[in-house]
Amino acid sequence: MSNNLLVTILLSVLVYREATAATNRTFPDYFKFGIATASYQVEGAWNEDGKGENIWDHLCHTNPTFVDNGDNGDIACDSYHKYKEDVALLKDLGVDYYRFSLSWSRIIPLGLAGSPVNQAGIDYYKSLIQELGDNGIEPMVTIFHWDLPETLQEFGGFPNPELEEHFAYYARVVFENLGDSVTYWTTFNEPLQTCHQGYSTGTMAPGYKSSGLAEYKCAHTLIKAHAKAYHIYDEEFRPQQQGYVGIVADTTWFEPASDSDADQEAAERALQFNYGWYINAVVNGNYPAVMIERIDERSKQQGFETSRLPKFTEEEIEYIKGTHDYLAINAYTTVYAQAKEETDPTVVSYESDLNVDTFIDESWEQSASSWLRVVPWGLRNLLNWLSKTYNHPEIFVTENGVSDLGGLDDDRRINFYQEYLSNVLEAILDDGVNVTRYTAWSLMDNFEWARGYTEKFGMYSVNFDNPGRPRTPKASASYYAQVIASRCLVDTCE
Image (cartoon, rainbow, N blue to C red):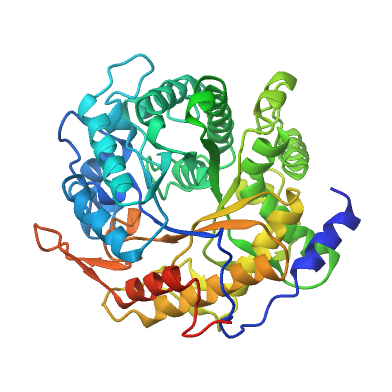
């Protein structure tokens, strides 16, 4: 990317920094509202009806101190048994679609290509999809959301190139068995977290720490696995099923700390090392140029014979390029990005390869999650950046939400949705960004990974002390239902 184009993109998205009142305009008729969960976070039934062990089962059982309070997802929200009740909640909200994920180990207990399929797992998801259809709710299905079968992790997990074929087998099984009732698919949710937190920082399962090495191998396999699944659908299933396939990536919005060229370049580099790491590949066939150049050069300085960033062959670049029917973004928060002096070239790590300082404005509202500050204008800037960087694609917001510590009167969550959705609508109406879907996170309080049940993102409260796991609507559920029904964020719209 030329410096002139970089400056044009950044200056065009730097104009939205001030908080504004919620807009009184209405969402377009084509715009759809949804809400999301993920299998390990809500299903429970961790070893029932033939389900195999996944990496979160294994980690929680073998290292209970990894998760706050020793929590685990053995029962979670018990959605495996209470899915009809969950669909009734979705019906009350009035959502157009429900984004949920499949458990690989529930469908293929061993995870291995060619290994037996668990019919009980298939039947569970068929029943859930049928219940959604009977209530006029579209399923939006994520094939993988962080819960790799433990058997595959014992073979090395995603850094092992063999995972491409195992995932392809799994994806084909899913398309064959569920595809007649599903129009929208996502292959992977937040691969950045799968690879960076799973194999670099070790803060997510499987908990490995190999920064600047294993995470790049993980991403390489995962991107090729995505492309393989996309082509399987495109060639074998799309003619009959007429569906759409994408991948869900996430990023923080990196706001340049100043108008200096150095800070603007640092912000752009951070975006490319986060979102672009995966999406530049599926759009253009390869990693962002800035990643390739920096990691190649640093690897050379460190004495590696080849770059720590694996290379796609020319054939692979052509195969991966264009493997998306829409672009998706999970977005929550914002930081400022600032240039910094180059780090010691002998240090092998993702952070050193990136080499950007980040900081926050302490006046930004703090959620219950240490990483999540409430910065609504950051989402509008991010949507504009996506649109300009990737040639104005159709964009789905596939996760957006805020955490608290519990309670039914969650006015702060209502304010969050009102302000963030205002910025989505302004991006559509004022900036011409083609956003067509918005997905709130989350339907109900659930297992929040390493934070267990201490942080609450749901519109419905779940009593985890009660074996029945009763759900109770919060004030935000009523607000979101009102927004969906009226397509308006305030009491009266134009």
